[in-house]
Image (tube, rainbow, N blue to C red; front, top):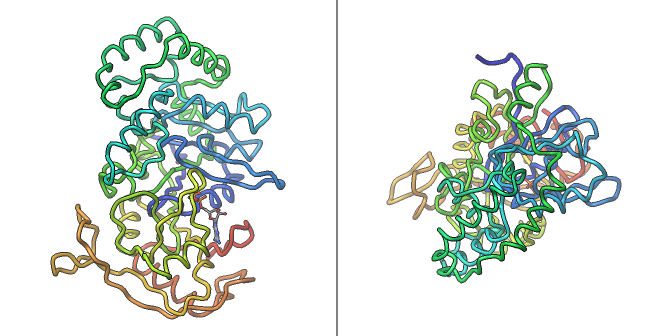
Length: 419
Ligand code: GDP
C-alpha cells in the first residue's frame, strides 16, 4: 500500500558541506512540508534573510517559508537545549514545527561523554563535533536512550534516569565524566518540557496524512553519503544513515514513498575531521581551494580538508541514493585554475578500481586533467559558461552517470543555472 504522492529528497553526495543549504532554500518555497530524517545539531546551514543571519542546525530549512510545516523526524537526535536556543530566532513556531515524539534526546551528559571519548582516542580521534550525537545514538541502539515523549511523564523519566546513571556509573567514571545532580537535571528537563511540549507529535502520522492529501514534501538530508554509518568511510563516519534510505526509517516512510532524489555535490571535494580522503591536496592547490571556497565549518569553524572532485565516490553516492538529478555547487571556486583534475579511478595494490572498495585504505587516485577557465561571473545560462567549464560539467556528468540539472556559480540564489 502506498500513495500516489511521493516525497522528494535532497541528499549530500560527498562528505557533507556540499551546499545543500542553498538548494533547499531555493526549492523550499515549492514545498508544504520540509522534513529532517537523521543527524542532530552537528549539521548546519547559515542562511541570510533580509540582511539577518539565521543559523539552522536542527530546524528544517522550510522554517524560512512562512507557509511551510517543518518536521524533525524520529531518526534525528534532538538536543532540547540547542533546539530551544535555535527556536528563539523565530517568533512563534507553533503549528509550523513538529518534533517526533520518538526522536531521541541528547542530554547534557552525552556531549561530555562525546568529548571525553574523543580525547581518549588521541591521534585516532574521529573528529566528531563533540555535541553528543554519537553517544545519543549509542544509547538508542543499546536501548538505553530517552525519547522526546518521555519529557511528558516526569516521574517515570526521573526513575529511568536514576536507573540509567546507576547502570552506567562505571562508564562515567572511566570517561572522567561526573554524573549530573538529579535535581539540576530534572530542573533542566522541566524547562525543556515547558517549551517543547506543544511541538511533540506523532510525526509519522502527520507525514502520511500530508502524502494522502497530495502535499509537497521535501526530505532534507544532513551531512553526506560518504559519512553514512553503513556505506561511508567507517569508522570515520557519522552515527546515522545519511543516505536516502535513512529517510524511510528516520521518518516512517516506505521506499515507495520516495519521489525525486536530488543529489548535491561540490565541483571539488572537502572533508572535515579524520578519515580517508583519496583526492586530498595538502599543498598550495588545496589551500587555494580552501580560501576561494571559504571552506571553514559553519558549526565548528574548523578548516576543511580540500581536494579534487572524486568521480568514483560521487558515482557510488548517486547509485546508493538513486539520484535522479545532481546539483553541482561552487563551480566558481575553480575559477582561475590553469588545470583541474578529476579522479576517474582508484589504484589499490597495483590494481585499477572503478568503484569504491569496502576499505578505502591504501588507495591512490588516478586523475584525468582538464584545462581551466578564467571566470564564471555573470553567466545566466549553461551556454554562457566558458567552454572549458561546460566541458568540465559534461565530463563529470558522464563519469557519475547522472544528469547534472543545476550548476551553482555563487552563494546567491540567482546564480544558479538550470539545464
Ligand atoms: P551544507 O551544509 O551542505 O548546506 O553546506 P555549507 O553551508 O557548509 O556550505 C555551503 C557554503 O557555500 C555556504 O556558505 C554557501 O553560501 C556557499 N555556497 C553555496 N553555493 C555556492 C556556490 O555556488 N559558490 C560559492 N562560491 N559558494 C556557494
